[in-house]
Amino acid sequence: MAKRILVTGAATGFGRGTALALAKRGHTVIAGVQIAPQVTELLKIADEARVQLKIQVLDITDEGDRQAAFANEVDVLINNAGVMQTGPVAEIPMEKCAGTSRRTCSARWRSRRGSRARWSSAGRGRS
Image (cartoon, rainbow, N blue to C red; front, side, top):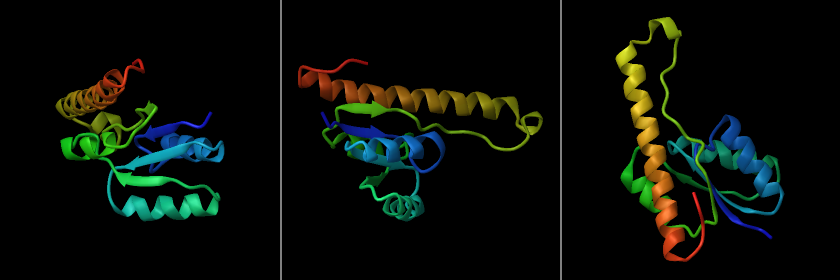
């Protein structure tokens, strides 16, 4: 049975691969990407893969983006997105790493909570 699936962090890596694979299997996939230019890039990749994706900007740290994403009726949330620091690990200040971890954890928790609230009100779902 086909599901409506929201994949966060779908612009690259595991998120992109997951979104494309699920779409190929016949699921309706809402692919969340962090910034608008990623929409165009992912549309091109989906077209080349001959799959349909509903792509929307979803910065998991932005409350408005999260609300817009959860306005979609979804059956499954794949909470893949995260915030990160880049560069040599030895050169990243510890306070930046700690802040990044807190923001990522907090944003993922809020995303999960948003989906759970919708599912609970509909009498289904679990986290």
